[in-house]
Image 1 (cartoon, each protein chain N blue to C red):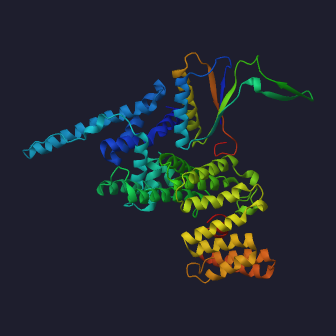
Image 2: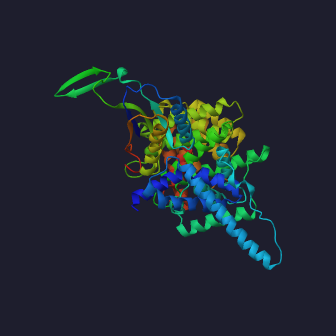
Image 3: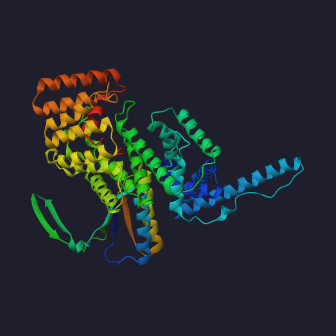
Length: 419
Length: 117
């Protein structure tokens, strides 16, 4: 088989994989088995489709094959069990789940359940991210390992351990209700955000930013917003990621150096993504329900996105939004960002007053953030000497603590961008 | 980017196709793989401004001599060329199923600046 034919088949399979694995998990009650069956279907497709062409309804074809394989496996297991049991002198009824022949319905519910399952709190955040990329996005272990700059073997072990953990914990394939649903939704969104940031901040490795990972997170956020359209935060997360992703091409200059938002060439922003982000933010607000951190961050990002030129930025609005964030989610880092916004909106002194109140906070001690913000505000005030000292302080701390080249840039980016 | 090219004199699409296309596009938007799409007006509403031999000429449609004209477009965000082709292939499969006799094409081309261009 040519590589092209193989890639075409894999693309068609991946198109269906989340729904396939979702439906199979519902039928078999076990996500590891569901994934194996979906892989069996891929193997069958790889052997048949290049010869016979891709069927006009690949979803139905793959599901039919996977179901046949499921029944084969259950029969085989049943035979093995009967043999074992007859040795014990005992026979029992075949206990395989009855739902195997059920039609593929509630497909959207299946995908949502699958997302809830791969983000089960019994798993570590890293494992949730890896398993979500594997089962919901249909990525290969190699692709996920590349995304996280991990060794393939390590990533394979992490994924297989995660599946075992879910099976042992008897994690349920269901959409929980009430408060538990809220909590799990927050977990799912946190995982999507983690995946995006892993790509966007790229704290390790040579690549400052790994766009593939950002795009996977963006897909997941779009999917989640469609699955739970009544949740303002899901739309808020989508809006935030669309708008942040819109700047991917402008965040580095030709030498690969970080470019802060006010210096970015806005012609290089992806205005289609911005339009989508602003529309998602509108949908969040149209739900009329109380908003949370993602909507607030998206609203701040939107203020930047709406400004065709840096000098058109509505800093007064950004400062107001940071006031809301600080009230709802108080933290020294938020205060530092709020200081920048107020500095831009109401003059450097307004910013310095906010900064002074938190500069000594232990959470900021030893980080470059207060120095970078102070330098920025003093520079705006025209105090060059003061600004130089503050920036030098920030740079020294950044050098001392940095894990990667992007660290100081990341700290400053944090200040200028959203949070 | 996917361009749909088709004959203009085939009348409106059957309802079944419109429904099926609506579902397929809804799913593609939900999956995050389709980020924009639009149908184009008839070539009667089209204006071409052409530079040839140092002269700028403006011509209004319709293009009666053209066999096929662009009828619509979509912008896909795909991980690979194959994924984009698969998305486009489905559109043709739906036309085959719901609009017997329809002839046309979809053309898939990368937008420059993406990872594969």
